[in-house]
Image (cartoon, rainbow, N blue to C red):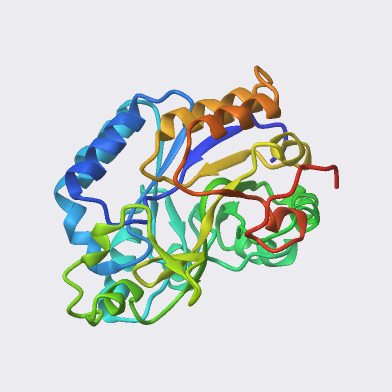
Length: 306
């Protein structure tokens, strides 16, 4: 579908925040007018899910009452019976709008409208067409896709009646593992982790042997050290046919980030003004946009037409 109003969406919290902090974060988002859709759910580690259950219903109801579209995200890696049951549980309600981040969720959602998340490998229009026939209505593309691939995919999906979503802010998920990096870093196993990942609410920074910052980890997930920032690229993405722009939550002022992105999308401020406002926030990680420009993902490239 083309010609839609550009939407700002908020992806699921990837990190293990304290339950009350998680709840209060979403309560604040409910009052944030720039964000129209919110993804809720544990996508990294099924062991964390019970921690948020006491607040899950009130958070989803608060968001819905504020006019937000609530989409429930599934796990990105399904290996254990606990994982399979978690995915099945999320998909069980026929009235819930669900984002599939693994083929296990696609199996449960077949034949009903759903979203496909960035952990699914949708790299071309042919893959999107197969999933659209099974019920997919929105595709959040993997963050490593360059501009040319995004353009081609947008063009190839025009006749499918689907929307295309792109992450434009936040650390980028690079890989998932069967082992928990956080647990190993503290001499523990995944089964006896004691939820040590809660100590790093934006991810645990890694360094090379010579002490240089390199990547970040979040439980079983490897993340970019840098924060993806596509503020300069928003007009070009919009022209390609992207209609949904995802922010990945961090401990910074996400309402302020959303306001900047909204301002640039609505042409109330230039991309340069938006970039200056994000720089002024003094975030604890550098910005990057390398993947979009066909370069190493950790690079920053001045925006140029493609």
